[in-house]
Image: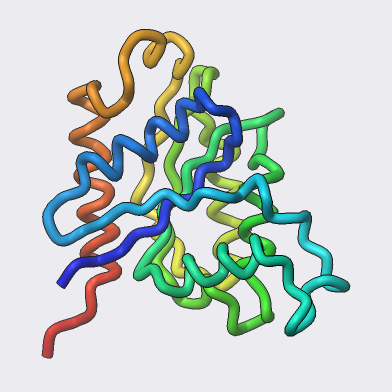
Length: 186
């Protein structure tokens, strides 16, 4: 059985190294796992309970919720902006956390990885993302981590998919998520 893993990228920049990292995860996913990048986070409005009303939820938010609900797990790619999680990724988590207690993230395996320019690879932002997604009801895979420092230099001329070390790490991570998301065989 194939496990579908939804990838959310916390950067909207066309040349985002975190988007490239997500593309690499999709390319190097092991057999039995499919990583699908969600397109459209830029279209999701800031969460507002006044517009989160049945029959009135913005189409982009509905699409995000449906994509997450149909996934077996999520893989979040978090850059670091000013030492913390990006607004676009936090906003996605907010939409997916509702309705409270029954959102698309409830009990779903979620891992957080990423790359950043700094020497620690965005670990602060990734930690904050894990915290937010856990509070939102997800089953955070705390042992599944990857923080790649120096993204601007490391990926200046090489796509992460073509970096053998990164490709191997992503294959391992997607395999771990696959193991957490696969249904138990009786």
